[in-house]
Amino acid sequence: MLRTKEILTAIGALGCAIGIGFIMQNSDSAQALYGPTEIQHPEDMPELKGASAANALLDVQEIKLTSAEFDTGIKLPQPEAEVTKVSTPSSALAEPKMYETSEATPAATCEISALARPVAAAMVDLSMQAPCLPNERVTVHHNGMIFTVTTSAKGEISLRVPALAEEAVFILAFTNGDGAVAQTTVEELADFDRSVLQWKGNTGFQIHAREFGADYGSAGHLWSGAPGEIADAVSGNSGVLTRHGDMQAADPLLAEVYSFPKAYNARKGNIALSVETEVTATNCGLEIEAQSLEIQPDGNIKTQNLTLPVPDCDAEGSFLVLNNLLQDLKVAGR
View 1 (cartoon, rainbow, N blue to C red):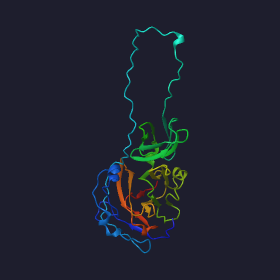
View 2 (view 1 turned 90 degrees about the vertical axis):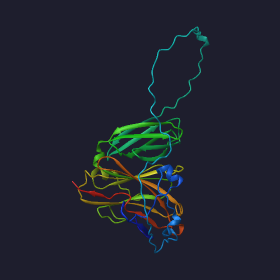
View 3 (view 1 turned 45 degrees about the vertical axis):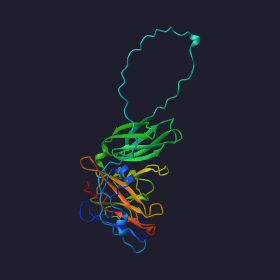
View 4 (view 1 turned 30 degrees about the horizontal axis):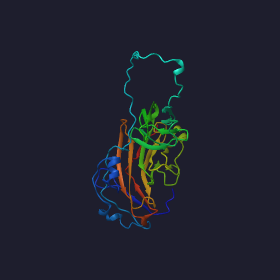
């Protein structure tokens, strides 16, 4: 990606004295999505005042990252309670005559079904049929990852989603409480490194992966403008970046996932992962929130939450860069 405008960079090590440039906020939205955090207001941070898009380097201090659950407040569908069948009691009423029977059509029911099937690159083809719920918002939940999609005019969805667990369970929830659950086994998951960034709304967040020393805009720099191909991840040539969620929906939940085929790659070296957002007319002067998820060697998911105070609109066109929200990958080769 060409950098024609000044990049505002905040770099540091998590858990050390030097921050990476952003803080957690205890706003109502932050509590609803991520849980309580320590309060600090942008007005207490003079570094954010008057930042310029030209010849400006933003130095923001006192970063605090926490781990919590990404909660949308949506009620998830629950399995039905066990049904006990009993014999029908005999009636004391006389059997009705044939000409007294009604030919009324039974009320139509809405049957919702979902199917998950593993495919190459530790991905899952996920589909759902809900014929009585066309053009409706659906929230997909999978092992901490959350994003929203919209059913088609026929009440269907068809997605390809990166798995975050070998025994992968997907919950698809409508806003009215209806939904479905699909499950499959993804044996290839251990062959891939996988990092997730998720957020709400049009905030401009992006994952940038620079593989084996690649510069911005060169081959090996993967981001939403150059996401790579799943076929290259299957063959071990490079990683791939996928984006999930319907950006046209109201207040969408969105996610980006970077996957690298560590078991199939022959090269040795590091992959630099960063999270970036451009200061735009849409987000300038606001606080935007995100959450990262990373699969650990033991299969557990490490999560970190972030609230980012974006500079005022006179910094429009600049970029905020977080080099330590996602952990860089060390590739041993095969």
